[in-house]
Length: 411
Image (cartoon, rainbow, N blue to C red; front, side, top):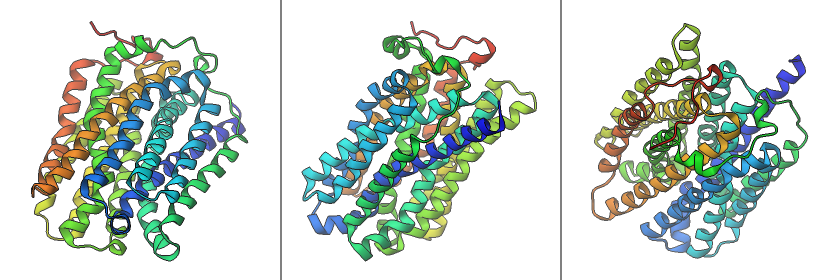
């Protein structure tokens, strides 16, 4: 491969990073502007939970088709269409005048944003071999955290200066600019089966034990991520009486630590592999380490200092992103590139749908006076359960590039 082609592959990673960052900027704006919008539109906690659920529900069911869509249409056109639609849906929030308008905008945003995850993972499987793929996945998985870092740092001041509508319009406009730049880049894939793929049979992928294992891991880990994304600003507001203008810095700390976790999630198994560890041992050892690091978040509600709470929550999301990067890594290890999008799409459907329960549970926990302790306890235990079930379903991870059986059918 020429030096120019190598640079172009990493440019594609940069573009995927930018797209997923914008994806998470668009979805997080609502959580950051919650206090302002509650006053403007007289929302209840259930109204807010319903908006979050509308997004999760729409995203979940869209994943059933968008992963397959990316596999069939390809990254170039499929990714561009997804980014264009979600950018327009994000901008539509600025036109909403009530709960119904916001729910509609959130639902369309969720449908289009479902393209992001399978497209990002398929990019790593398509353009990189197993050695470089770990780093590409780690970089890609930092994007949600980068989005979560820049959003609380920029959106509240922007909303105060120019109005809440400006926040939605700016984020959406940047997405449309991304689409124009995306079509200027061309690079030759490494995985040739992703260029002219054989027909992907959705039902076969759905019945695979591999898909079931990835789906279980996504359900148990995604519920933590989406709970944090939607409720973390409110947690700091309620537990520490922080006003909207004060929320940004603690959240920046939390998501900066999460970004570091994503990078280690790619680098740690790559280093272990370089030292001669098997893929199975490297992946599962890394995932066990991250699962243990999440445990302290169960005690956040008993912490009295917001910065100490931010450090504990940051450690939890550091571990989440490391764990999540390895879930994606397991997928690219054992699933052929032509079917990666479909596999991730189905697993992400399960993860997003399962997250709705946590979102709704937290709204009722506040109404019933339970606070955040029960949800945080659930989050703390989710990863050890996920790793245990993944190990039972996939006792040994054998990379497809090494001749391992990639799709184990469930019986």
